Image (cartoon, rainbow, N blue to C red; front, side):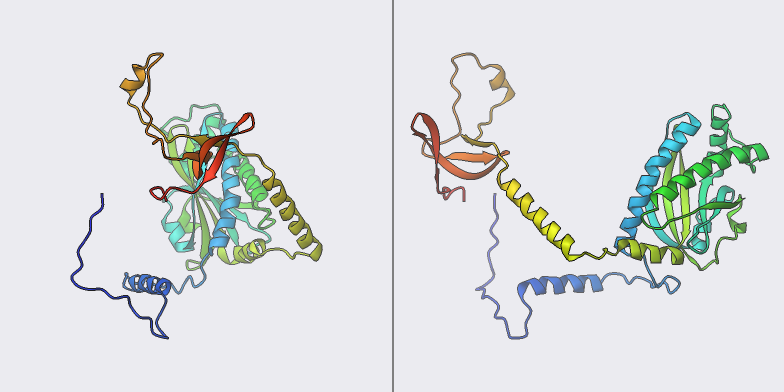
Length: 331
């Protein structure tokens, strides 16, 4: 059904002056004006440099792989169903990162060579207590002590963290050849001497599930040390004339092979819709009235998509279809 709105008077097409924008430009200009009228966004002078989309994508690929392997590490170590999933990657000051953590947590500080500064792998204290409980043969109950780990518990937790850092080193290798070495453990984020309060950090948030309980695990890396490696990893490598020729030849061969790929073509009537009651009542000898008109051409389809029309015919002893013009009511 269509609705026609009567015009209030004669309309004339706008005349474009030599300096007037084209229709596409007019639409873009309106969009820009609408965006200007939106609420202003505060500029944070503490973070003049932002993670670009390419850098975020590069980090996402690396930490996605780390999350998948961390799932295996937790599951095999705890001998219970665990999962780790990447939530997001954001840029924060170190003060903002500390404020987002609880008063008591398990922060593993590690050197981020060759990047300057210190990195953090943070797991909530309740989660690390549950991990230790599982690894020592316990059930990992919902009642866990809220205290620092003992020397034995710390040794068990350290083994788990070392495995996680080894996996992170492997999956970040395309970006930076990280050599993480544990330098200490801190339970109070306010006392962790990692960076200055205004220093910019890259914070990676993960969803950690141990059994039925959900926790948040984070990785914090220095932004200034990570950006040069991200820029190098995102930049395309130099391409020689030989590589260009090989790529052009490969593209040409691929195009030739695509032209030879057979596809299944069907010539069929238009679809006829029947209700379930009609279909269930069909008996041998019944006649089904088709919705296809006798004077209408048949549809020529590939993978269910109609791309031409034809009339039925024969060529020698074989049935054939003659391609005809598309009817006006269809076009």
